Length: 227
Figure (cartoon, rainbow, N blue to C red):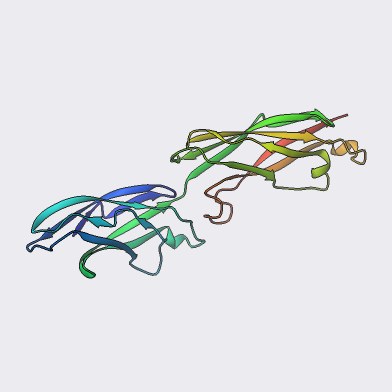
């Protein structure tokens, strides 16, 4: 068995293909089972999507093999690019193997608010849209979450999040509307009526599968309480 390419680029939450060419001078009597193993100390828990091929020999045939990276990253950079071994077996007996280096890369995630500043009087609800872009795109839109990522002593007194809509768009650009209720607490001094908060935005389905801060983005949002 030989593989092409011998080094595969794979993005988190995506899959990629390589071609495996099988050759045999005997009849193996049926399809081959495949499994993917780490070839060294490092590596991620990748998913071999193609677990069986219909080659039985004799002769030569090339088949597409799909590998996916649905799982998370670790804190060890050595795990991102590591050697793996694709192993073919028949009736529980290994008959061929080949090495492939797989380079798993993170998604590029950017976040912004539209508008970047909100103002309102106590009791008023204002809407802001959170926009998240992901490259390479996901298969479709997923949920977005927002919270006050940098709470200060006046955070809950000035405003609070009262609603976040389901996300819309596609897997490359997603948007969700967030309603913020302004609260005029008499104890807030006039010097604290304008605050810039770093809101924590996260992408559902990626959360929990990351190194620290991988899918969380802290985006500034200015809030102005009008008296």
